[in-house]
Image 1 (cartoon, rainbow, N blue to C red):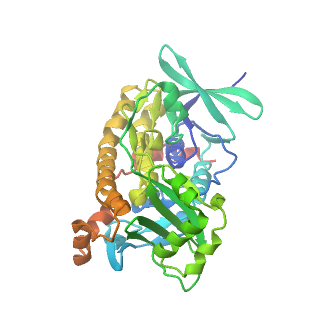
Image 2 (spheres, rainbow, N blue to C red):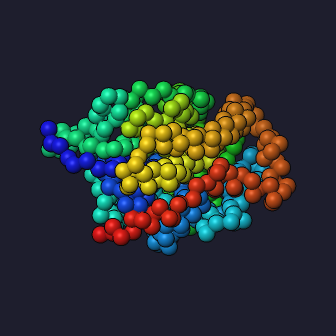
Image 3 (tube, rainbow, N blue to C red):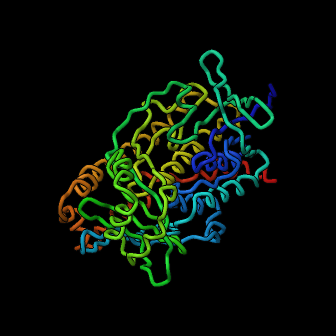
Length: 413
């Protein structure tokens, strides 16, 4: 067993929550070790919408201009097609932020960007292919994690351990934290289709009787999300790939022959949708954030941004005490108190949309009119600012405490 030196904070999981928290803590002068079990961040069909709230955080940190240099597509409006009726749902251009649009980019590009920025600080360490396999506890307090590496087992000791290892978090399971499942009546099939110059520019969703599809403009290709009833993939496969392509021909606003690119079920990835949250986000020495604390529906694509907001709130509350060795376990409960209400409100709105828009459309035998609140959006440009604010900024967006952050700037490499 190889023992490592103690750090202020060990973060399990190199996703948006883990890397953003690692960046913020290291920038504030705390020693941080981030453990990522994979060799790289190249996992396809992960959330890739970076919302104005996240870009506002990067602006506050002085990183926005460098972020803008990454390849990305900018989405200023969102629209939906209900049968032949096109309705603009959200207009982000009026948001009072530095970047009033949604940025679409592969999540691995965003994570590599955060990792590069964090590695500017001498107290930040990112360990790839290092899987946390157990918690180290003494007298009921988590003191770090056991880690499986290519060279065998080791330990990372820390005054604070943060589980940011996703919605199937191994750390929260080992800690015995209870999860409340809020229900999700749908799953999503992700796939890609070539995008040609003559295709539409807009990112949009189409709602037809018995079928819903969202098309994200990724420049050279469309990233498509086909919504299906919960656990409905087996029935779709049983009907056969030709029948699936026929359904896509009806839903996609593309030439019919484009779906011929789908020649195997291997090209289609299932996202099992979960909406849940922990009753308690922490135990002594351990804090859960991001999807490890609350799995979000893909509605609105807000998962990355809720995770980043958790990281900002945690850094604001914890960085100073960690750096000054005055860390108090009650601070972990304060992180949950700060972020639980926005999480609850967001999930409640997602459930309302699931139950009142998604389910009726999937179960419909013939085309239905859009819900009343959607029809109102078509009539009022002003009303379209409301969903833009909910999607783009979220409920109670967090801001970086620059006084705390600036304390660690002298520790740059």
